[in-house]
Image (cartoon, rainbow, N blue to C red; front, side, top):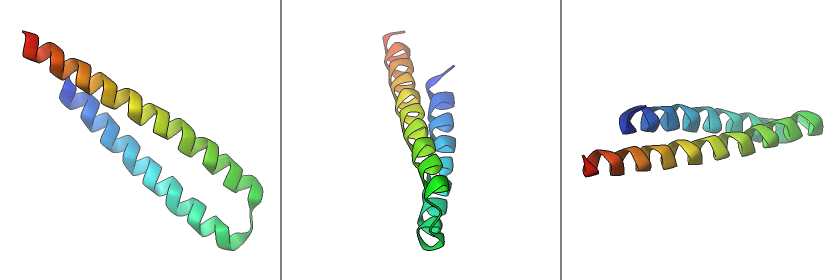
Length: 67
């Protein structure tokens, strides 16, 4: 996977993160604590995946520079 692919994947994950954040915000009004906890878990997983993709992109970019 190249740096561009990793960045594209990170951007897709960021879009999912934003969608989950919006849903969580909407749940604030619906008073659905169980679903809110599920979304918080999803946000944590997405954040971790985004960080991994950004690190992968950084490593790929550094490897490309060394070539």
